[in-house]
Length: 380
Ligand SMILES: O=C(O)CCC(=O)C(=O)O
Ligand SMILES: [Fe+2]
Image (tube, rainbow, N blue to C red):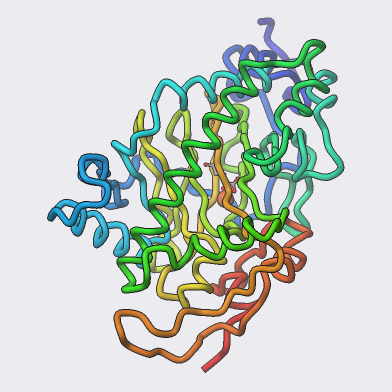
């Protein structure tokens, strides 16, 4: 590529164009100002994954799902400790086929490499419905450097098919099959993990799953598993921009797969150090979310996370977000392991809480306090 006098501003170019420009122009490429997040939020790009982040092997569970073998107790205590301390852990040997995870990621890449006009056919009514490009401005922060697809209630509704029929002239059965298989697998894994965490807290195994089943049996339609695919194009100035700002997810639990590392960071207990999550080919990353923090009376902590960018590579992630029914009344579990602790949260319904998050899709932490604590915490 020819030398240039003025810096080239990279904005809404296609994914392929960005790669070509970045490899040819090195430091002459700048990003548009609206993507430069305010100074206090700019990421320090720690390049080494943190070795102290919890990685938990679920093989003992697969070998003996209901058994009382020692391995199960060890898994329960490792998961519970990680969910209390980090609100985050990565599981391996979980039984979800790697081939399926990679097939979903590859279908996602196929979509994000399409021309912008074609991707925009998949846009829905807001940024959490169908395709949303890189234009969402977060007030007082800047625009986030990501594109995404959100498909609602994938286990109950043909949302993937409706999306694919808008984007591709003859639909896309490969994409749709991957969505429904991934949805079923991650939903089953989520229920197992919720059961193990309940046991770890001394609660009945079905404590966090039974209300979902009851509401489903009563024909309650708005509970669901939503699938989101996130795509973070390579960014010429990764130290100035963010893929997503620091947040906790507002739902019950998130299960996430990443196709490369060097992106997702977790905030440590000290409230200031960011830890880079290592890529594991068969890793599934689990977040405790706001509802689970409130429901467990703050014993489990929602994991604060954000996404930083890479200069020379794109990154894709997809996640299943477990969304309770709007009517679910979240009343903190006060008695665990036979011991009573007064409620630290007022009861709230999921519908009320999600309505409070609508501007960003989550309640941002403020002055070291998480959104859920600001919203429903009882100050002592
Ligand atoms: O892409 C990632 O690793 C995280 C995405 C995320 O935090 C989200 O979509 O809520
Ligand atoms: Fe998130």
